[in-house]
Image (cartoon, rainbow, N blue to C red):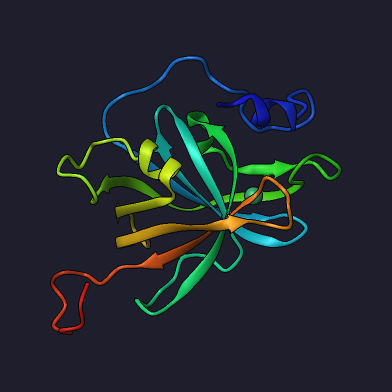
Length: 172
Ligand code: MN
């Protein structure tokens, strides 16, 4: 799953982590990295099957239930990337500063088991999760829309779900 990640980078030139070999288990992690590349965006990454499934979100997380944010799926990243911060040199893939905007654990809210992998949900194009971060908190979903200009980049929408404990009676 990490071939594309490796192919795009020269690890002699970028400080980014090379891909690991073993698959960690346990709690599922997420990270959101602010990436000042040619265009500023936020990289939203979820631990799935031992790698970080990744989406570039130009505008960052939606703040309100009614907001939808474009999220373009990018190549899987290695788990070590969840703690990466630094400057990717100019001229290298994704050149620019990367900093962690938020990170923490997440749960799969679609299945009964909150630690169930969302691998199949990603394949099917519909993911429902609960983020337990400092800034990123609560329910979110990702819904695949289609391909982007005939490239292999895949367009998704990132949506904020209604918190179950709010007083607002609108449906969740
Ligand atoms: Mn990026």
